[in-house]
Amino acid sequence: MEKKGAAKMLEEIGVLLELKGENPFKSRAYYSAARTVEMMGEDALYKLVHEDKLKDVKGIGSALNEKLKEFVLIGSLPYYEDLKSSVPGGLLEMLRLPGLGPRKVRALCDMLEITTLAELEYACRENRLANLKGFGAKTQGKILAGIDFIRRSEGQFFYNEARNIAEKLLEKIKEFPGIEEVSLAGSIRRCREIVKNIDLVASTKQPGRLKGFFAELPVIEEVIVLGETKVSVCLEEGINADLRVVKREEFPFALHHFTGSKEHNTALRHRAKSMGLKINEYGIFQGEDLLSCRDETELFRTLNLSYIQPELRENYGEIEAAQEGSLPTLIEDQDIKGIFHVHTNYSDGINTLEEIVLYCLEAGYEYVGITDHSQSAFYARGLKAEDLVRQKEEIEGLRKKYPQLGIFHGVESDIRSDGSLDYDDTVLKQLDFVIASVHSGLNMERGKMTERLQQALSHPLITMFGHPTNRLLLGRDSSALDLEVVFRAALENNVILELNASPARLDLDWRHLKKIKAMGLTVSINPDAHHLASFEDTGLGVATARKGWLEKNDVFNTRSRLEVEDYLDRRLN
Image (tube, rainbow, N blue to C red; front, side):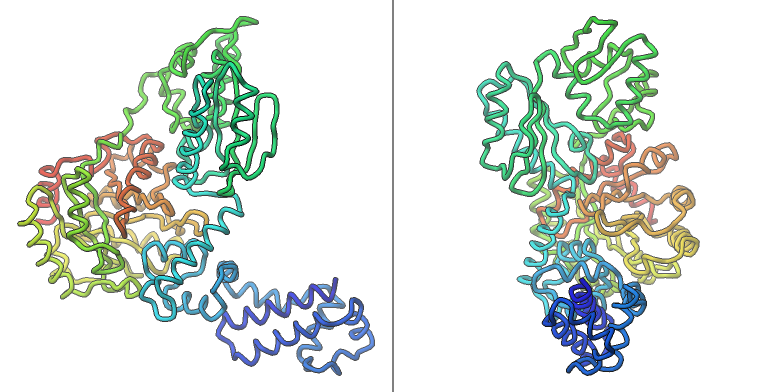
């Protein structure tokens, strides 16, 4: 065991030294020592240490001799532990990707300030590696494929990925000839941002045949459980799926139960008990009698409640609101009239301005807000002041060519560490709107970060505050900040808060939206689009907004083109 552990430790020390930019000869010495130890007999290292003969082995100098003695005799090496703690853990995780060695990982850290796998994925999806020296579009594609594999193996999926897989599976189940009803359930139906498995509920008069049909679908990699009412499988994409098969009369209750959440279900059981009833996945019972319900609407009505949308079932006050008749009329996809926060090939986007305009016209939008990165974002080919002038001229031409679409010229301006923006006011005043975002110094101390954002939000030319908490799902926590203070600053300065709909962000978190709504703040659902396909992420933002209790009037880009033009004119003049 000492031999294997020592060889692995020496190898990792070499990697860590490379990541820190130490002398390459030092790293090679550890790599060489790792090979030497690896080639020893099972008990050789132990004997050499105890006989004080390790220093005589070729390739093991005095420094390595002392470190290996310490490791063998004590069972640990403080030097290794200290070195490991000095390097962000995400850098080591990146080394799991094919084609990324220590040098390239260090280059990504130095040039793009990337320290986690999630940050690397986000940079790739924003096309930042395509023109980066030593990388390119091909390497970028391989990195994304590698990240996808790692995430699948870890069993956690972004909501949109899991939903897309689940919807295809749902369509397959609908092909079963004896199907009566079938629906997605679980965290996907509740629109949770991270999904671990797919839940489905179905009813049929032929449960045995349906279970067999499901278990034999070609998309299934492995059948884990084939039970009386449940089939658990692993799909070829690496995510597990559970199908519950029930009788038709049980379907509304099973659908509600397996949609969850656990907290919502517990609260509803307590309510039923207070009414002398019992509710579970098989029905609502008064004594031994089953109270029939055709669907979930009747289920809630039986408990004297208005229908609660699946997204709200988190025990965040939805049961009380359903009792009082004060549930919100949630925003719908069709309420979105236009989109903001769109990047073009002027910075790190893929598409031209005209391609974006044509897409928006085809999609039926009334307007689009262009916001390329600002000059501080050198890694994203951020625009200098003269680039903004050139872009404005092109937009003017497109406005004349396509008058049916409102084209608003903006920028995503970096918030510096002192809370200032990275353009002079004379530059910002030439734009229709400004999104202000933090892209650097994300780990700033809580008080300083809060002050930084307060200062930024007091700037009179800021229209929107982009991805407010800076989180990256499955990779980076929110920046430390006092959200209450930041939200208050946005309210006092009439700044719109962005709900960034990128599947890796979904920032603002839905847990904050109910409070934002109560404060009277306005939210804009923005895709942060870097290519045409990511425009569809706006729908993910709508799902998150619904989960956060938002209605049409709470969201800025549900307004008409004329209303938006009027707002922006008044805001900046």
